Image (cartoon, rainbow, N blue to C red; front, side):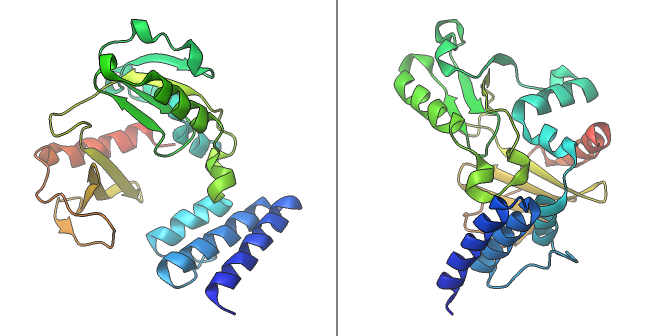
Length: 243
């Protein structure tokens, strides 16, 4: 049986498991299928060792409410505000379940529209005078009718209330959007930092040594200028906002 057919069989089993209330089984089957298709082997979900396996294990079996809170972009704001302070957050201009009530005429010249319950649900508005409002509304409607659990069996998204946020536009002068630092923590300590610049990406250890990791994005090249203090700051934030 070829992998294409096995993949289709796996999808049928996922839906069957979901139909009889076996949510974790459905998620695990989806994780097995997707990992096999991407890496050519099945992940070990019973005794996870690699980073990918541990993430998939958490998706399938970890049901701590804090995971939902931190994935919900609005709830995460409130969590960080309570634990660290509002000063570290971009300004929030509006939150709504109905994008038609966004007061565009009262917004600043630049802002960002995003959804609370997904990945990649962002609309950058660097110049309000030139934005296509109909396109913004269409994107918001699409996001509000999307659910990452239904699409990819990512449990943490299943119960997040879909909402639209309008936030402050932040720029560091490197492009339309600032460099995006993703801090990966293992055992309570920062061990891996991923830096995104548009469609380019670099990976570093905590000492900012460049790592050659598998990926489909071209490199940025060069350590970001802010790297000197960001690892220490990230360690402090992890301690501050840890569950």
